[in-house]
Image (cartoon, rainbow over all chains, first blue to last red; front, side):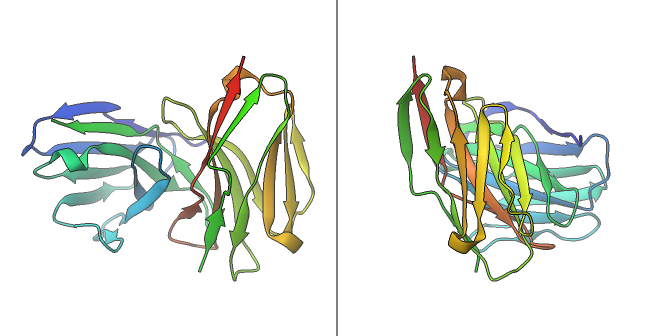
Length: 114
Length: 114
């Protein structure tokens, strides 16, 4: 089946720095990818929808200047957490739409901001 | 609006017991898909099943079985003869046609004790 990868799987950064997370569809092209955030012991919450070649659509309450999303190719979307702070520490999961109903999920990236 | 409810926040069972995880959903669409995912401590979402709204047949896969009942808007998941390796958080999710995203339930944390 379709595979979605994320890199890095874990990252620790200092407060004030920026971190880039990559999401790749390995054996298929994805015009639409999604970014989710998961707080400890909570469910997945959609942050934004990333469309290849166009601007991302952000969910209400998500700061677009804080969480920069770029979907420059049909196999790669990136999420950059700018000027990270400890409250940005979370588990970030991407997914790629493979059909009108289905998404394949990446393995997630655990971000810790110290 | 779509909504997925998993009333059981946490469940603990002893190994070899059967356990049922409840999922109740709300949607105005007549065409939709329902999913179950397992999230072990590693964080990666593991796909378990996809069911479309027109297929109410129950499904069995090894120790896993699913009971889909449109009349009660439920899609319950049963693990027979539970094992310690079944310990994880389980998410039920709903997808609408060309929907922006999955709507995830809050998850049920299952602990299987030896």
